[in-house]
Length: 217
Image (cartoon, rainbow, N blue to C red; front, side):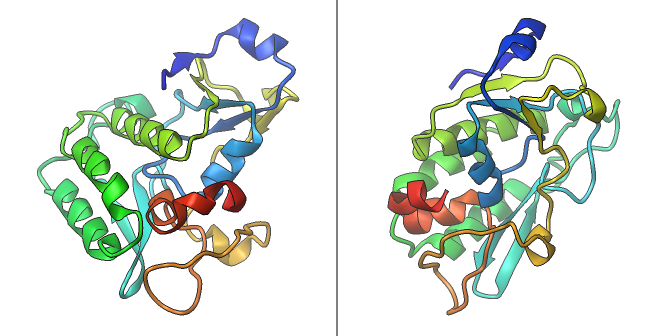
């Protein structure tokens, strides 16, 4: 899937609904639920990095419950999201790969998808943005979701967002499932526990119930 720049003519003339959203690491189910509603996806490419968000973390289900996987970043540089570099002084990508394999190795669709996720993680992208873009592209392809995917060409202030844009920047955050009653997902069989754990990374849905993804999303 190609990612192109959104220009002013696209922004001003489109009558379709677009979602303006920050780019996440192996995004949550809530993220994809919003994407499938929109005609066009616009990724916020001109924001500053925000700590303690899904920009560099995801949540999976382990035998001990919900667990966060965090991509460590270098804190030098401008702070703009596309300039954020990944810190490889920690072998985080091996930890993530091992954690996902340990958690989902016995799931129904693990063998169909895991090798491709591993190959992306092992590429050792310099920039967080590039890693997240490639993982998002893989997820969209596996879910057979075909949408126009763009990068914003400048920062749009909240009060200047066009009427046909749904501004979700900073809205999908860790812990939102505890307080936001609008987070509703059809339940599916997960790998651990008897109680359904909502709004995990999309990998949970891919590995456990990808064939039902169109109904769940």
